[in-house]
Length: 178
Image (cartoon, rainbow, N blue to C red; front, side, top):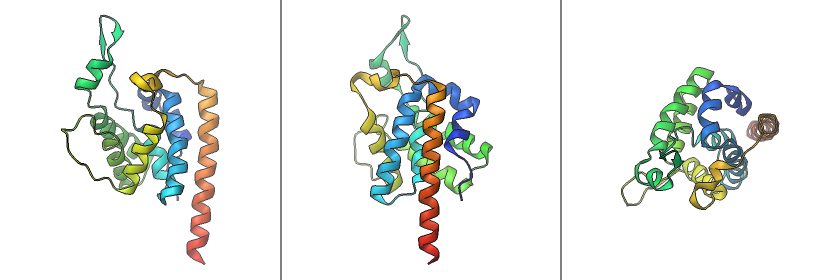
């Protein structure tokens, strides 16, 4: 059973503030990529879409002299760490199951290795799907963060995705009970 929907996440003021500044169009696109990747990799689409939608909720705006500075971002940003904590708190406040909230927060924490020292990081299937969903929508120089989408269109797209996730969850439930 789903405790929190994508539309509920979208409508929350925390999401509106932080996901919008990191790119709502990118967040919605990543949620869709995550849905398809979750089906392909046999991962829970509910967790995957939520994590992908919230994956950049921890972004800080790196400016120098009033202009976005991509180099500062690449050098100093730890948005995955901040985003993991912020998403976990938001999910718990909205009534998400604590185990699910933790899994989503960990997938957000590990969706990028940009803040980690060079090395090998082994991801679980959910974490891998969220990282792939982010990569699928990336553009050079971080341009994917600047695409725009109206609130109305974003809400409509997330509502449609909620219906797909719900239908998939119901299908899985029926198959398991047979």
